[in-house]
Image (tube, rainbow, N blue to C red; front, side, top):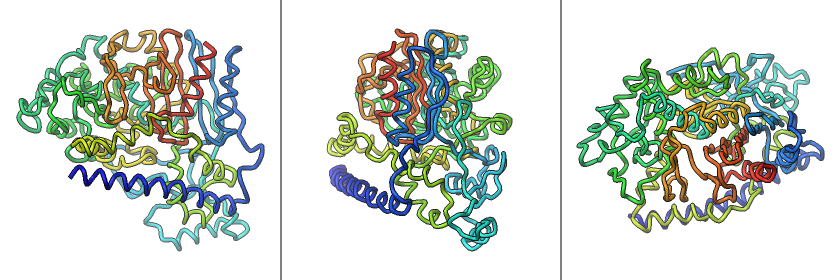
Amino acid sequence: MDRILFVLFVAFVILQQFVVRKGTKVLLRIQAKRLGGPCPSGASPKVRGHVDPGFEPMRESFQDLFNRNREVGAQIAVMWKGKLVVDLYAGEGLPNLAPWRYGSIDEESEHGYGTRLVRAVGEKAKYVFTSSDSILDKVKTLLGDCKSGSLGTCSAREEYVPMTGEMLIPLFSSSKVGESAVMAELERRGHLNLSEPIAKYWPEFAAGGGDSDELGKAHIKVSDLMRHQAGLVAPNSKLMIKDLADASAASSILEKQRPNWKFDRSNPDRQMYHPITRGLYASEICRRVDPKGRALGEFWREEVANKHNLQFYLGVNKEEWERSSVVKILNLPLLQLVKSIPQYIFGRLITREQRTRYLNAGNEFDTLLDFEAGIVAGFATKFLKGKGYLNFAAAGGVLGAVEKLNGIPSLNDPVLLSLPNLPSANGLANARSMAKLGHLILTGEVGGKNGMDVELPRIMDHGIGYDVSFTSAGYGHERFHVDGVHGWTGWAGIAGTILQWNAEKDLAFAYNTALPYGRVGKPRGIQLMKTLEKLV
């Protein structure tokens, strides 16, 4: 069976590469012709913000991303020796005007905020369309608002605004840095020992899902979970939003999950990145050991973010949502292009320059690095080696974990962003607060020195596709060693966001972007980090 899957996978990769490479070029040529050619000369947005003397090359490197159409809207920040020496932002962001909601899915949430048609008027949305609106109703509404009576000049569309340093952007897996910081802080306060089995704090966890001796769940330590070695990558079935909103219901469901393979600390294949589930389990552990019984996102707000004045949320509440300027994450370029063809007819996506810049960004602007090509090959060879179950676990860990969490734009949904027990993925922050958090962890003001011990040697992570080490609290160590960037700890997100610190150089670096580019190597952020390394 695995050999058949291997052949099918190879055929799929070849076909997919042909379609993406050829299809994207054709579609881009069509769009360039329709829009009147490539991005106009001089249209690149100028970088704003400040840099301290000696850090000017960071501005130049950041500007280069926009000049080469690698960015649409982004922020970067650097803390050096406790001082914010770089605080830059450029481009545009699309305000997320959706109303805050918690614990329920309604019609608008069901169909996602990435495909809504919105016209921003001040702080409110004038129009909100969902799939329940007929095409005729949409056309009538659009025509009624067009002064010229022409769809081509209709103003009813999503309005972009200049990016600022205060705007909050979804972090995806960079959220895990905050998650790990909470676990380290709990240990520092004596509420938790990362080296103890999870079952010590959560007895029902051990036998949940079957015989504990058969599954090995009784032996899984908290540090095993945080190091992505617990084998709890893909849940047996998706967790529903209504259950996650109920702490006791979520606990009951999670403890019954069967590991994807028997836990064995000597198993060389034991490490697989837990993109979503690590935070679900960590939050329940936090709730059980915290004297106030708070979910991880709630502990984070009250004990870390508020005390250190961080605009960094792991489960945003109603007040925070309404007072903040939240930027939507855009969709992956090719997928957005395909989905938005009908929307182009009504002229309701984005401005001409913005759309052209967006279509040009993220499409083969870098050749795959050797290790990234190796990831694809490794995925295929697992079938040949009889380890196809690892591939299924990796896929299920991303797409099969939580209801409605099925792609990058889904994290524009306030229903997902509001959950305090989804800290592996639903963080919101700006680069300033990200860099400040990195500095607080580096100095021990958050978490002390707890959870910083690194497991060596590095071992293969079958979710990420290369060797990587994690500390006992779950911080990634030398995440970008294959890219020639050394000495850094922290993590990164699928969209390209990065939060890292370098203890030797007393540096903390943050890069936050509204334009996802799902490369493991994070080429945009790496360009900035390499520039920074040369300066310090």
